[in-house]
Image (cartoon, rainbow, N blue to C red):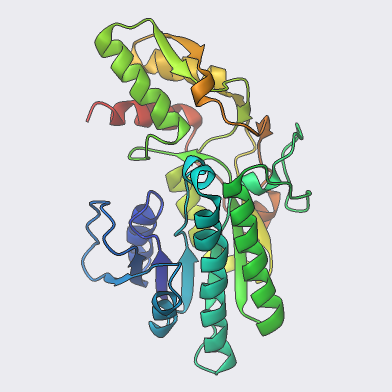
Amino acid sequence: MRIAVTGADGFVGRRLVPRLLQDGHTVVAAIRPGAASGWQPPAGVQVMPLELSDDASVCGVAVARPDAVVHLAAVASGADARRDPGAAWSVNAAGTARLAEHLAQLRLEGQGDPLLLLVSTAEVYGGAHATPRVETDPLEPVSPYAASKLGAEIAGLEAHRRTGLRVVVARPFPHSGPGQDQRFVLPAFAQRLALAKHARAPVVKVGNIDVVREFLHVADVVEAYVALLSHGRSGAVYNVASGEGVILADVFARLAELSGHRAVPEPDPALMRRGDIPHLVGDATRLRAETGWQPRIRLEQLLREVVDAQAH
């Protein structure tokens, strides 16, 4: 297949692109013009500019005539979305609406039947439920980021119902790995612990560590997207999750032990997020049953890789 990956230079995208090449696909990498990611595309990958707030730029993805699009590009940081909710909506929701519409036009004009794999987020569930979330649970986002991603889902699925565009929605739960930005919790903890170890500081500042989260390895998330490209049902939503929750305080303690510096976590009001979700764990029964996917990398290995990445 000819597959376009938006946000190909991002944390997940730069792992997905070589994985797709490995399966023999032709890959088009759509990235933001001037992005300073330092990513070097693998040989044979076509690179094209993509600015989701610019309709003409988004149209370029459809002009490339992909058989499928994995839509990763987004304002992905909750902090960035809180600073400018309007920009998050423009990119995440309106940008997805533009992309879905241009792909739908290909189908309506008989120029192809593209599949849109729309990558959302588990944060659309919001709320305070202490059980693993299933795809039919109420959607109650409590952040500008999550709300804008729910807007993206609505836009994509509306295009599916109206035009027949093949759309599959993935809702990944928290995931990490080496190379993830320090704005995300595991690399942030690892970096602070490394700095504290170097300075022999006994305390590390943290946000709310009483919440429950699950953490997938990015490689397992990539495999889920590959599986959904082949086996996902159009119009369906799939949780990408392990179902194994852990209190963030315990994750910090394990990272501290792996780093060789058992610092004490100290809550810092400046790092607290208003509307933080108390419990965010997913049930991926649908994904497992329909694609055969299952996570293979244990949390301990993920944490070790994140800590080791600080040494390089």
